[in-house]
Length: 234
Image (cartoon, rainbow, N blue to C red; front, side, top):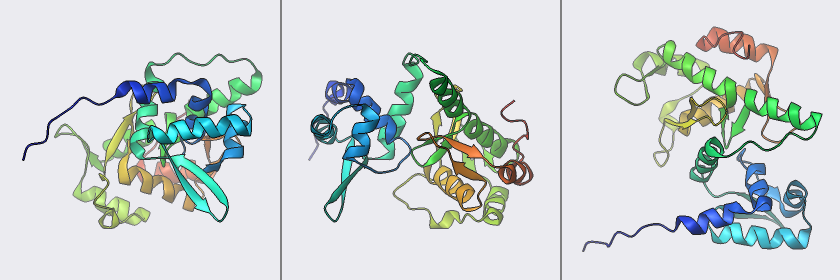
């Protein structure tokens, strides 16, 4: 029996995202982490009683999920698709005004290197994907990214077994980086590479949410392993 195709309700999702406080909640969770209501209230600059209504609205729109740890509840983005949608919206949105030195420092740090859900984004994320293509780990001749036979060996030496990727998630996807206007690596491979960078302590999390920093060992390691230029942030 054929199912009737219907248009999706974009307006409902747009309205849920459109409130400034709810947008701040979504941005705070865009690194793939989970936070309690109190932390999200602080991020949004609202009271606990107010944040509860915002969180309920975001859950109704299927943008957030909730996890229980004893009596505490933690909220996170519902899926990688939500993170991708936020990244795409950021590409067409006007920049937030910079009102202080700390705002300027954080904005610069986000442009350099940040987490987009569970994978690396920003200038460093774009430089990494370009290096994977230039080094023959990924091939784009067919119109999309794919791992080459040689790339499987390089990734294996780096500590990534692509055979362990879940079949429910594409091995390779990409996001158009809102800051650079170019692709950074997403999908299961993007998540695995980013996770491995943290394991090797080539990446460390910054003080500001979503911001990450490349360590000296990471700068050298990425250059030797994948050919990422030493001056990627120049």
